[in-house]
Length: 160
Image (cartoon, rainbow, N blue to C red; front, top):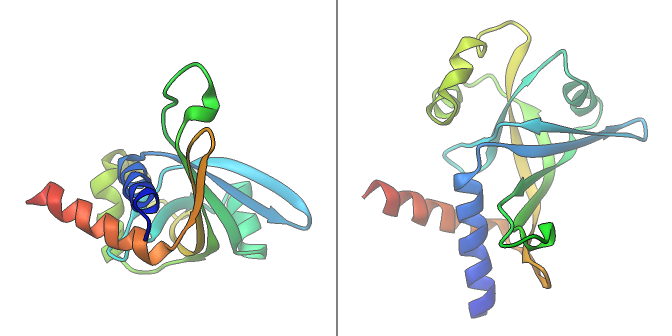
């Protein structure tokens, strides 16, 4: 992997690890929708989302699980295009695993107030593609396996 590509993988992993929110884009019956969501990463470095059955995006995911998740960092100046951003595309599926609940709550403890409501369910995004823009004129498709490896590496370094 080229040095520039390696740096993009490191930066994209840091962006995901530092994110407390992202934009979820869904579409069903040719009608698009975008919503703010609060992702957490599971043990496979795949995004987890806590979604309400009452929301438009959940209804759209039930009709069509294909979606995109956009992480956006802070711009380095007045031009918003200098902000790093990572778009993950894939399929979202609801989960029944209780162990994922604790992973989600570690990052979003305030969700303990509503995570057990009947209309809330954890979903997992199974990533198929990832595209990173590091700022103006700096973009690349990234192998998600390389991104997962870097997330594991950065998480281990932070814990150790």
